[in-house]
Length: 366
Ligand code: F0G
Image 1 (spheres, rainbow, N blue to C red):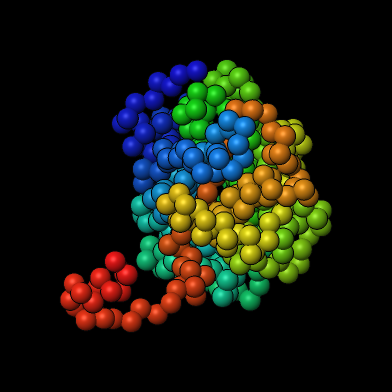
Image 2 (tube, helix red, strand yellow; image 1 turned 90 degrees about the vertical axis):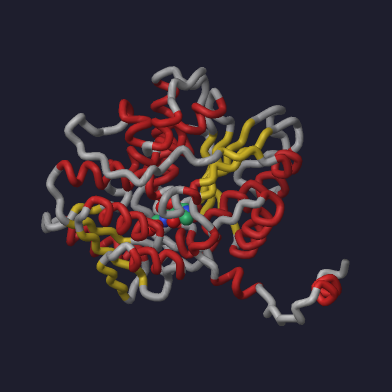
């Protein structure tokens, strides 16, 4: 396996890098903020945890232009929308889609309406939508209610919907799988990621299959998706009317791509599993403090899920007898600074001391 991608293609965003795999024509105006080409970070400590010569990598999607993986799909969706003469975007969101849509709309010079569940959007994400100049509407309802309204408004023809029910979003997001294969030289054996509306697991699976079909990889990974216990409709096989989790990005009770997610786990012989809020928060701190990667709680679901696969007898997919030298990729989907409230709650107050070396030495107990 080899990649012919040049450095300049990497810095030009996912359409420039993977145009041949994307639904764009030479006439499509490219609306890009330089998304994609995110780091795939080898993690010695996670690798140690599973043992057996296995290698674990973290795909850090939090370093995209608006701090989440959504930018990959947004560049394609907004470029195509411009091609079709759209003047306004609309989306429902738990926060990241709205931040991304708002940024790409600003870049394109069109307007953007975001419908959000009131009081359930992480501070940083709401701030982003505001800063990028979106028209923000908060509803007394959850994400599923917001998406229902967006679907109806989309039918009027006044807006282009940029949720992942728009196939251009999925097309863009599948480039993350391409990057992983390009970098590893083949597909990994397992791919772990958080699941909310289930667009991302759908997109990764499409990307892996497409690369496999074009003989850029020799195998396909088992896809293992993690939902938060209080918002796990796919795991429990029923709509959750009032989903609850600290990981507000994946607080979704009726995912739009439910069937596609199921197809991905069945076809790949993977699994859907659940992780608790406590385990998510513990994994978020662990990843920050042991690997230097600060992610938002929803993203830490893939790391919490990794630990569950290593340690727990009731994991949907155990790594205890994993084949030696397996490669595992965990996607972390969003930057930690987007959702500071949990960490702020853990911080102790800083009491200033005198500005002398002696006082500072005493404070750090040298
Ligand atoms: N991680 C983060 C940080 C997210 O923002 C989302 C989804 C997911 C994981 C789950 O991805 O929905 O493709 O299964 N956020 C959407 C939003 C719902 O509105 O920003 P998914």
